[in-house]
Image (cartoon, rainbow, N blue to C red; front, side):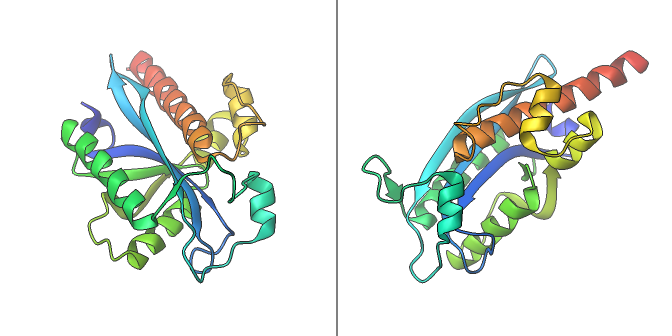
Length: 200
């Protein structure tokens, strides 16, 4: 069971696109989650879910961040929702998945996971959400896993070493980055488990 692999924690890959680097001063602009399933004792990608977020009034959006993630807040196809609505809907999905695998709670997986985790914690406090499914301080970081498995820390370089396709034109979309991060996570864990089973 998946619950037995991570001490009853359900790994959920999270990626956020934000209006800056300060979780207290800059808003979340996009959030995506990539669920992980267990099939034939291998971690595989499950469902993904994404929301564009309406920036919180009063928080500052840095133009440099918008340029970096190539985000046009006024794009006609960008249908943004309230931050609180997005979080509550995503948490419902995560909790349903958590119950399916009989896990006690979710654990955030991310590339530079502390960044996403800090923004998520701040958003929950801002929205007065007290029942986040995620562990309050523990995370699984693919930067660390990538350094261990490939001697690289940049996501694109980790992917190259692992033989995972990485499209620079798609990068810095929350949904794409969550998917690629999940592929990295699954491959490193699966490869490690394979080595351990051979050695035992």
